[in-house]
Length: 560
Image 1: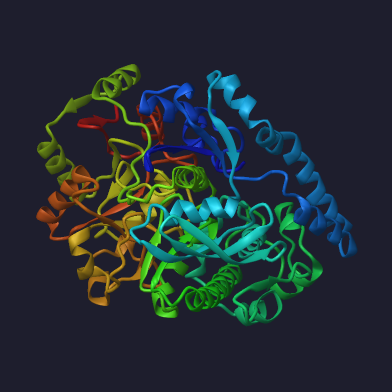
Image 2: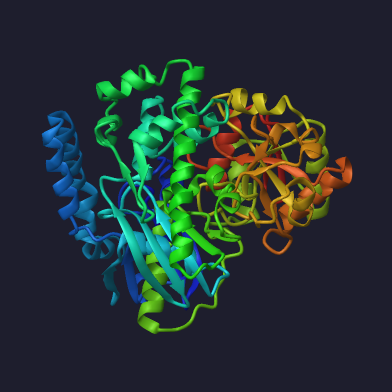
């Protein structure tokens, strides 16, 4: 389905994982992930004949709730009913048909195998993707997204290799669909641009938050919540259609080409606030239901809301948090595989995800061939000299496209497919947003910081290797790194350990040696496209920009 992906697990360990979009260059790719599967098999040097199980993170026959909700919309909106059914029929003919015929689809592309095909519940796949690779023997687990087969949020207790379902919230009540509908109202793309709403929220005042809490997204005593689809309907919102009550309260919806106003920022701020308070309400209920453990795993698309994640400790009783980097639907490929492994072998967990580098890597020879095919000048540098040279160039205001090792798993660039800059230069944010990334000026950038120096800049003690938490920056340090501090005084750090990524750690260390600041500005290496995957992708993207240097492994490339 959307965010199609593939992951390969062997003996409970993650061998390879990648999203299909990185190969097709189509963001949030929908459909059978043939290229991602091909990569995973190649990375392990195996064929389909070596596979025991193919796990699919969706049970396509579970349609009862969706059909019931579709017919219910006839009561209040024939237009909404038509929207839901037409989209559903389109899915049936395309991605749902692929789900039903998955075994033959795999064999058509990869040949006959002895594998067994198993369908795993979507939210169970989310839960397994986080808990099974976490450092916790037991934990509370909360999965929350737009919708699985019929559930939109599930409360779990994880113990060893068991995931015990405690409670579920079903369609049409969905935090993810509420946020997506607001995304559409603000003129952004659903299931793609929700992070823009999160970034815009800091520029507004939450003046609609009380109305939302009382009339739109309301909480219940048992930890659940309800969404008033008579105020805003997700399926209509996808088509740019909004009910009269919505426009009476919020004003006219924004078109994609319209200017972003203070009212739009206020709507974003209000939606963010009510989503946060709803999540905290559910988590506090979960805390009490799981024996008051202070350990929490999160998964689902809503778990990519790093602003909410960063506030969990101060608003709940949880003190130890884990979120795997592909927390959205892409991550369910990994969760389904892990769930089947532990279900069928009965073996205990012995793998902890400490980094996110599960994608393709390319040799120096492959990089050189790509550079030469584009006729670009380059020079090869030993690792220490490379880090010294690049750190010096960054300290002098240059931008660097940095391409190294295995591609990251998940939507964040974590130092292997990154665009790097000096966080001390306030003006660099606007330069990158407007002249390089070609995106809205309100979009923030993230700091990559040496793990051991994190406490000097952030009072929060939560490890953040996957850039999934926003924290307050210490006020006395914010002035040092203005390019990565958001308007509300927060930043979304990646804590970089020497163990996880020694080359990137060494580069940041060299920058600290020159400047005294153990931080680099890190944003994804892409321009209006998925993050680059191959050396050819990297060069094409580099040539679209006015970035000064491209680094492919230890090859330093310059523009002609």
